[in-house]
Image (cartoon, rainbow, N blue to C red):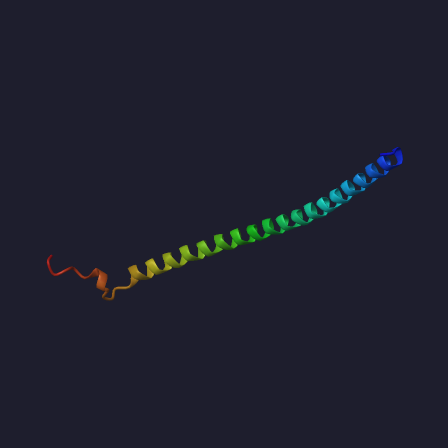
Length: 83
């Protein structure tokens, strides 16, 4: 291998490495954007989950209060015959 061949080989390898680095940087940027978008969506879903849990608790309280205020007959309040 001559000096010119060796230099050409090194230049080709350098070009290949630069190309790989550019490709990896592109994918890292793409992955970073995807992760950022997922984090944002996760925060939105967590907030929605909190709101839904709060509404469920409020509905349960409302139902319990209406059950206490209701003086009508309920099957679960009936005493079994053996008592």
